[in-house]
Length: 256
Image 1 (cartoon, rainbow, N blue to C red):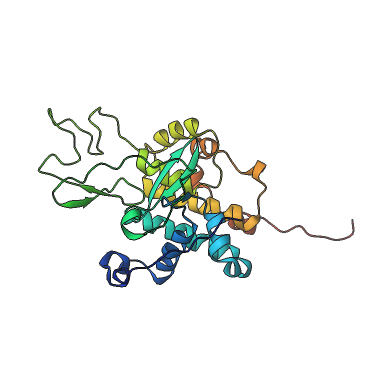
Image 2 (tube, rainbow, N blue to C red):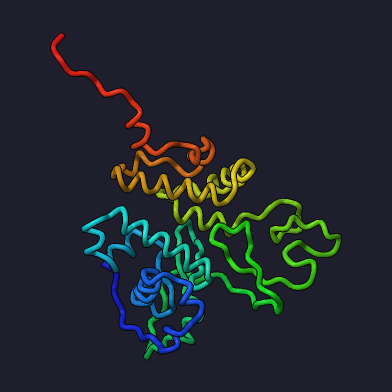
């Protein structure tokens, strides 16, 4: 069981406009993550474990609804940049930005988890929402060339000047939601190809639907499709298993 830690909540939390954009359930989830995070504000990005630690009785009453609530909450927190999602060694982690500013810890223990990537200083200017980011990450715009490269003006509009779209941020969000984390390099290549056929939102919704199906049917891990396999086979177009089963004719039992 994950060690739960004592944390503090500042009065400013309740009057924050950014926090007010969250549902009450997501606010509670956010506070709960503070108890799960280590002294550096880092924890594993595993919705199953988070749900089990923070909402054990809800999980017992309705596993599917609880898992979906936690998954959706993590996505919303990342969308508002209240969480930073990142990966190291094919494992997913969460970092709470501004941790040192909001938590005063006496004799903090060194983190045993991989550190988050260095966050670049924000560019002064108007904040715009990146439509290609599955979690709606906010990026800073500056002048007319914001997010579209520089120099010859041949950027692709997704923060890359090479002419090839950069799907790194949205892949991390998609991969974190997908129910199986294996063969990440192959999954990245498959995701890039899939983006030629579907939008980030469509792929994310497909992964959410498949994950929900895996949880509902209690599918054994060995039968869960590899992420690259799901993407290459256009899994986002698959119908839910329950709908497929409902369309099949029922067998007629009787004597021969």
